[in-house]
Image (spheres, rainbow over the protein chains, first blue to last red):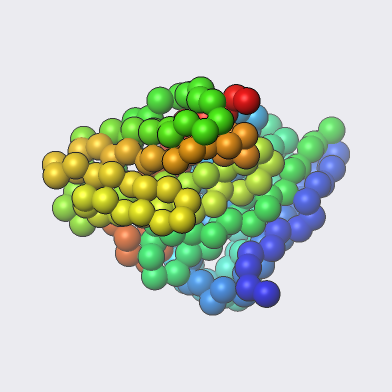
Length: 112
Length: 111
């Protein structure tokens, strides 16, 4: 069953701790994206990657880091430098039609 | 991506047709228009994409005038389950685009 999987669905962390969100896709897509969504707001782009071992900052990259060692995987680390990390995080992937992306179900991160 | 402008919110009633308009005055020649739907606590879902005139699928229709400076997403006979946020994106349809979402239009369908 092809798709894009984010895990976990809910994540709780103490303030000051780094946390890594998982995103895996088996769609053979080249491009992958990470977004942050706050309540009642639209999606804001954190990072995106067009190919393996390459990624670019989006609009709100500060306090976040990513890696793209495999085509299927694009993990996002929320570092202690992110001042307000509590949010809904969405991962997406796309292939040859750049505006047509497939999204995961999201990870809701709560930092206490 | 070209800047887009959509209404922040819209209300409708079950069974009505809903039209959501997106303005994109600086659309480029190679740009496509794409719409997504997002339910609460879920990722957005691709609905429809077009370049010019009219596109229709099992979910919606997309109307694009000749000057392409705006587009209208049409949802026929909406139901309560169509309550969602709808996003309009405009940009080149090549691989690896930096997908940028605006605030979207929050559609509320009432019984």
